[in-house]
Amino acid sequence: MRLTLRLFTTLVLGVSTLSAQTSSNQHSEPLADASPVSVGLSPERLDRIDTMIEDAIAAEQIPGAVALIARDGKIAYHRAFGTADPDGRELQVDSIFRIASQTKAITSTAIMMLWEEGHFKLDDKLSKFLPEFANPTVLVAYGHDTRRYSTRPANNEITIRQLITHNSGIGYGIIDRDPRMKQIYIDAGITDLFATEPVVLADNVKKLAALPLLFEPGKEFHYSEGLDVAGRLVEVLSGLPYDEFLRTRIFEPLGMKDTQFYLSDDQVDRLVTVQRPGKEGWLKYEGTEHYDADYPIKGARTWFSGGAGLTSTVRDYAAFLQMYLNGGEYQGTRLLSRTTIKTIMAFQSELADTKYYGLAFSVLTPEGVSHGGLGGINTFNGGGYFNTSYFADPEERLLAMIFKQTRGNVGDETGAKFSQLTFAAIDD
Image (cartoon, rainbow, N blue to C red; front, side):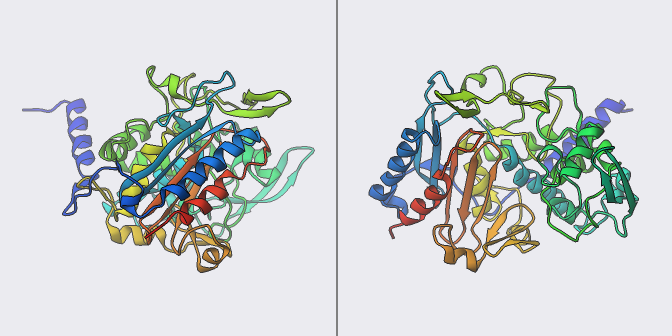
């Protein structure tokens, strides 16, 4: 019997999807609520976090926050404070946040799942799978008045490792610290962050590939939208649209029912408004000329940014981090081998004396431990553009996050204080 092309494609993609994650010899329990004492945390010391956040709200450093702490796979602290919008809607523990760059760790995880399946080697040239990245050029000179630039051929091509470790030479457009790359990307019409227009990942990546690199691949660490390119690479390697890959291979196995690029109608009321300080209180942050801050709920819904596009809740993201603390397994499903996680956490680029960058996260060094309040050796962490942050300490079997949605300089110190008070609450 002949198979139609559509049926054949469906079967192939179905087999590919099934191969993405496997059953495991291990079987952790899903994250569940527990008393602080049962996991070696002090209730009285956790209450200090309440006071710290409430004081920050009173001082108008933040309008509100949702925080979660889990240890040994049990949630011992999960509370909401303050408001979700300028009209005074109260934040809830299941409020949905734009997690922006916290998307990057999920994209790197997707890449490493495909690496485990043998699709590529980390030091393969990117052009092997995305031919538009062959024959790259490097920026030599730029005229700010004319907006013209000159280039030279690069000595090497970008590798997949360099792509996901921000060593590729790719820039970051409107948030790039180099004004030349910022303007080059704007003039080329690159979508860097969030889009309500009908932008498609494949088209955007092709435009980006035609632009010069800031430096020779592998020579520097420069925060970039390489993870957007990685999202496209996932599509090419898996045969699935990027949003579908994440949904079927990561979010559904981890029970992350509130993590997605765009919200359903019944989720919209839980989205937290990005706020900025005004003379008479908090105001809605409208975005800039280059993107609309309402991107998750309106527009074409075709842009799936591997570097900045996801929305989520603290509980959902906790499941993702718990999978890492479990050595790659969650509820009997293995997304990554623990040996792969060792590779992900290994040194790739120095960021500062306190931390280095691996394949998905910033990782604390012994010098970082000596600063105090950041965690133990190999604590990994990250955050997002709209003031969300997280950390996880494998030795203490602990993860924590504090999510807010603000832009503008408001003197917010809640992230650093939250980390300090969380580690101070360990009592075993």
